[in-house]
Length: 54
Figure 1 (cartoon, rainbow, N blue to C red):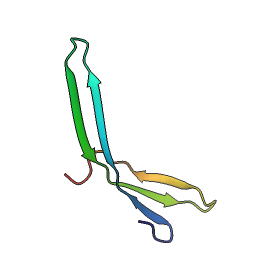
Figure 2: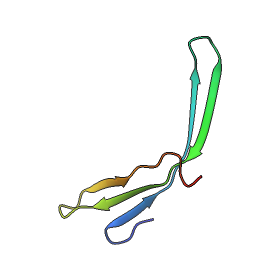
Figure 3: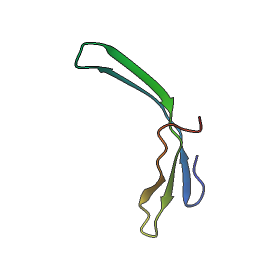
């Protein structure tokens, strides 16, 4: 969702890893990030929140 110079970016994510002792771990979540468009037209991240609004 984007306005003139601000955008809200929301994504679902999954992370799966195997620990050194062989156990499998899984985490999931939803991000809630905000980007702002600069004067040069480039989008830059203003807020990075990988855990979303939990």
